[in-house]
Structures are given as structure tokens and as C-alpha cells.
Amino acid sequence: MATKTLSIRIDEDDYRFLAAMAEEEKEDVSKAVRELVELGRLHLAMDKYRSSEASLEKSARIAGVSVSRMMDLLRDFGIEANLELEDYRASLNTARSLF
Image 1 (tube, rainbow, N blue to C red):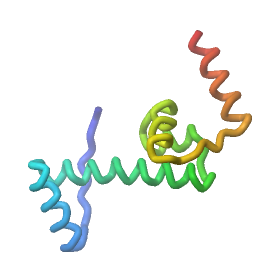
Image 2 (image 1 turned 180 degrees about the horizontal axis):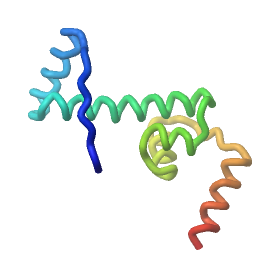
Image 3 (image 1 turned 60 degrees about the vertical axis):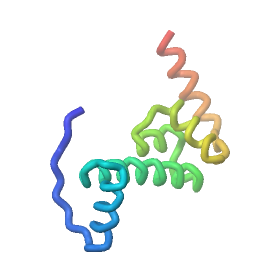
Image 4 (image 1 turned 30 degrees about the vertical axis):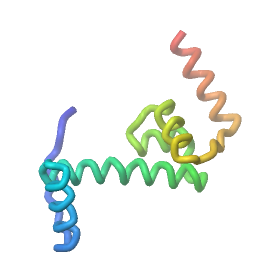
């Protein structure tokens, strides 16, 4: 996967938190930031799905995972499915295109 370099400004408390987290995990600060971004995407996706602001497919895109993985994550976090007829139709069309 191609990576991009990003320069950000954060306050001192946040930097200390990141540095301590990185040290505890024996990794660099950049990796700690990437892990937090990944967790943030997942949290945002689940929150939007829970509040019906995003469909299952959109939530999966936000989280950066497959739809089936998103379904597993929602189940693991105890979030009930709010599937609608269109979701079933989209799944059926996807299955048809695979076979």
C-alpha cells in the first residue's frame, strides 16, 4: 500500500500521550498515530451506522474494511443490524455478479 507523509500540529498533552503509548507498545509515534486513526475510522463508521447516518456499505468504506468484516465488527460490538430491503438487494446483486 502506498503511504503519504503528513505533518500535523498537536498540543503537548496529546503528543505526550502518543509518545507514552508508543513507548509502552515498543513502536514509534508514527505507528501509534496510524493505529489511532484506524480505530477512529472504525468508531466513526460504527457510530454512523448505529445512528442510521450510513448504510452498511458506507460504514464499511469509512472503516476501510469489507462489508462482511463490518458485519462481524458490528456484531462483536453489540450493534444491531438496521438492514433495509435495498441492502438485501445490493447483497443479492453482488452475489450474482460473483457467480
